[in-house]
Image (cartoon, rainbow, N blue to C red; front, side, top):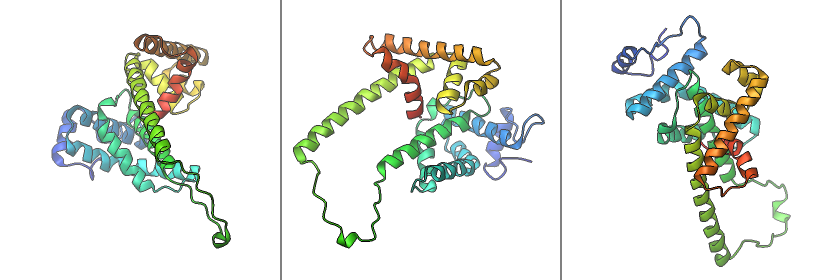
Length: 253
């Protein structure tokens, strides 16, 4: 069964087959694993070519599973958000940040797109005002106006812009340090810090025992810290760098 039959044009299907991309489940993989593998192959091809037909095929093939995951997240978080809107924002970011995608294993796209989608949900929750519902709103006393005046808002706005600028610089250093790590270190950090897997679960994927997994994580974090400290001229405290991997992995796409 061709898992991409409804998603791609015949010319793209021929191209994928020529590149050695099997469009059906192999004997050693489940159908879900095959779907993940094909998503990863399509994403890698789009990253390398930037072609719209490849992105359209990726969207058609992957969007149902991403939407299902977003619905689960929204339900679990009891968030008043539209999964359809979140899906569109997620794929906008997939398109925008395609150059940062790494196809290291068959499930790379699933892990990467869920990281992006989680950040989209987080930002949407922050941007959505809380809705206070009262059955006696007509009788409620008028609340005092506690909003700041224009001068104070201008000061806060300038502080916010500076903070955003500093955070962008920090992320740039982090991205360079992360890219310089070995493939195993990057995968270990992604599985533990982004997907929230335990050391035992991560160790099974990497083929190492729990004690070795702890050492891998310790060394990966130290290498990341050392590269960032060297790049930023020892300007960050050790405590800040110690917490940087987990915070930054969760906040970046």
